[in-house]
Amino acid sequence: MVYNNAGNFDVSQDGRMIVYASKETGQWQIYKAIVDGDRLSNICMLSDGVSRSEDPRLSWDGRKVVYKRNNNIVVCDLNGTIIQQITNTPDIENWAPCFAPDGRIAFTRGLNESSKIVIWDGSKEFEVASGWYPVFGEDGSLYFVNSPYSGKDDICCIPPNSTSLKVLPINAYGKSNAEPHWVLGTNNLLTFTSDRDGGYAGYIADLINNKVFKMVSDDLSSVLNPIAVIKNK
Image (cartoon, rainbow, N blue to C red):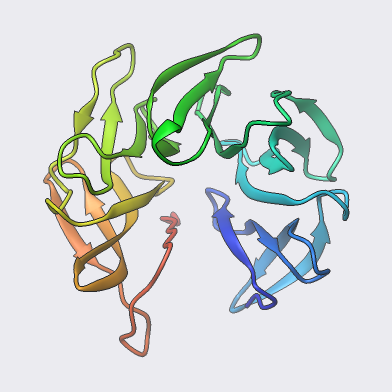
C-alpha cells in the first residue's frame, strides 16, 4: 500500500484513514490517506515539506494529528494547518507523541536512559515516569516502555488517577517488548513488538486474560510494528 521508506503508521477508529511518515521527498514528512480496500487514495502531505516530521498519531475523534517536527511536538488539523506547538526545546528531542481520549498528549523527552514520559494537559506539562513510546488505553491508562528489572525493554502501565508503575505480565522476561499500540474499538487489546521467539515480530495481547498471540502476514512471515483496528459490522 505504501512505499518509499514509509513507517510510523496510525489508523482511525473506523479503519478508513491512516496517517504515516514517508521519505518520498528525501526528507521525512507526514501524510494522510484514505484506505480504499488494499490501496490508498486521496494521499496528501500534512507537514511543511521542509522540516523533519515523524511519529504521527491521530486524536481519538480523528480530527487532529500530533507529530514530531524537528525536535518539537506540534498538533495540526486534517488539512495540515498547525493548531499548536506544545514544546519549545530545540536542543532536546521530543518524540513519539500520542493523544489520550480526553485530549491530553503524552510524548517522550530525551533519548536512551534519560528518556522521560511527559504529559501535556492543555496548559502545562509534567513528567510522569522514565520511559519511551507512550500510548493511552480507552480508560485513560498510560502504557509505555521501560527497563525496570530485566535490563530489557518491558511494557509498563500507569492506571488512571495513579502514579504507580506496573510491569505488565504479557512481557517475556529478558526479552525486548516494545512499541505498544492500543487497538481502538476494544477495551483490552494491545499490539507490540518482541523478540521473545528469537527474531523480532508483532504480537497482540489480551490484557484482561493476559494472553499473547503472534501476528503473521498472509505468507506466514512475521509482522513488525503492528497496528490493528476492530471494525464494527
